[in-house]
Image (cartoon, rainbow, N blue to C red; front, side, top):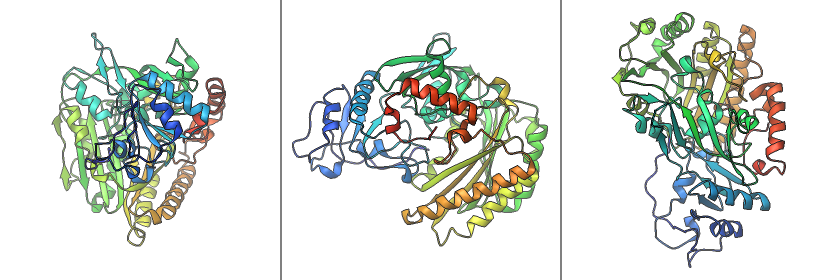
Length: 485
C-alpha cells in the first residue's frame, strides 16, 4: 500500500558534497555522509537549490500519520554503509528509524525526527539456479517481488495486498495466501543478513546466530537492521484463481454465514479468504479470495448465490491478483491498526464485529472519519508448519485486523481512542465466547502500546529480552521507535 505522491523537485546532497546554499545540517548527518558510499538527503525546506531530491519520497508512508520529518535521510548502498551509520548513531545516541516500504500504522516505528535510514537501494531479487531459494532485499515491496518471480514457476510467502514491504511483513512473521499450505513467511526463511547495533554484519540462521534467528521471526526492529532475507520458494507453476468482491450491506448476514461455513468445513489448504467488514465511507463487505490453482474450488461454493456489486474474480497471474487489491486507493489517510487473535470464529463474534462497524460509523461525519475496516481471517490449522519463532503460532491463532482511517490531525486523539475502545469491546466478546487467544498478538497489526507479553507471551518475551541484551547491550536499537519488549 505505497503512498503515491507526485515527483517533487527538491534538493539532492551526495555523501561527499554538501550544497553551498543549504542551511547548516546536523553534524551527525555530515559525519555519516563522509563515512558512506551512499547518499544523504536533507529537507528541501532548508535549501534553495532546485535539483531533484528523494527526501520527501523516502520519508512518506501509506498512512500520512506515520510520517515524521528527520534531520536527514541516509540512503545506504549496502550493508557496510548501514554499519558505518549505525555506529555513529549509537555513539551519539541519535534517534533513528529504518524504513522498508512504509506501511506501519504506528508513528515512530519507521519514522523519526533524527536520522532516517532508507533501504531504497536494497531491491535485489536473486533466484537460485535450482529455484529452491531466493535472496530478497528489504527495499522491495512484495508486489515487486511477485512481479520479478512471475513466470519462474516459484513464489514466496509474503503480503496479500499491493504495496507492503518485505521488511515489515516478514519481520512480523508474515501471513500469506499460502499460509494454509506452508505456515507463515518467517517459517520459510533460511537466513537474514543483519547489521548489529555495534556495526558487525552477520548472518542469522538455524546454524549461525540461532538466538537472533528466533528473535527476528516476529521481533521486528529490536535486534539489528535486516538488509536481506533468503527464503525457501514454493511452487507456483501456473495461474491462480482469485480476486476481490464488494457486497452491499444487505449481503452481510449471508456473507457471515458463508464465512463461518467456510471456516468450519473447508478442507482444501489451497483455498483461502479474507473477509473485510466495513463502515464509514465504504460500508458493506469486501471479500478477498485466493485459490492456488486455475479453477474455482468447491470450497468457495458456500459463497454462491451472494451477488457482488463488483468483482475481479478470475483465473490470473498471482502478481496480477495482488496488484488488483486496490490498496493504493486508501493511501494518504491518517490511520491506525489494532488487533486481537482468536482460536476460532463464531457467529456471535462476527456479529459483534458488524456492530462495531455500525457504532463507529456514526462519528465519521463530525470527526472526519473515512474507512472503518475489520479483517476476519479464517485460516486452516497452519500451526503444524510453525518453526521456533518469537511470534508464537503453533496453535494457529486467527488474527483480526482493525483499521480506522481519518483525514484531520485534530481528530487523531478521538480515533486512536476509538480504535482502542473497539478493540476492548471485541476482546470482551471473544473472552465470553471462550475464543480469545491470550499471549499472542500478531505484531504486524498490533497497536503501538502492545506489550511484549501481549505480543509474544511471557515466556517468549522474557527470552527476547535476554537476546536483546546480548546483541544490544548499549540499547542502540531503543533509539528507534518500536514495541516495548
